[in-house]
Image (cartoon, rainbow, N blue to C red):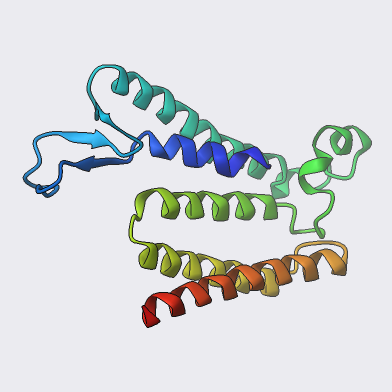
Length: 178
């Protein structure tokens, strides 16, 4: 869980290309990798990196949340409380209320969207605004669903999201003043 955001950001950076100074996306005949401007995008070794990063992104962004959704789906509701299933997969859902076992998929989706915002939006104002939108939606969902079994965990998540939300608001205020 701790590696997910950094890994996804690193993989998305493989696709983040830019055009040469003085050109636009439409007029640029060559694009360069944003993290290493000596690398021409989608040519040679970069193309191999794109295929590998694409496969890993499918795994991390689609397969992992899909597997969690499959494990915690309604059809497995009766199996979720069995000892064998709990020992194998309990770390994915045991802390959530009954009927909210799927919440981990929402957390991974939020982390993925934030990673996309950080990598592909270069303007700090747009990054802050997009993050504000994502965090507002996440806080609303947290307050609506209260997915954790323990009230203190729901409160901690609410406070964490609220703190991140106010941080983004302060960033937007700073940009407005500047």
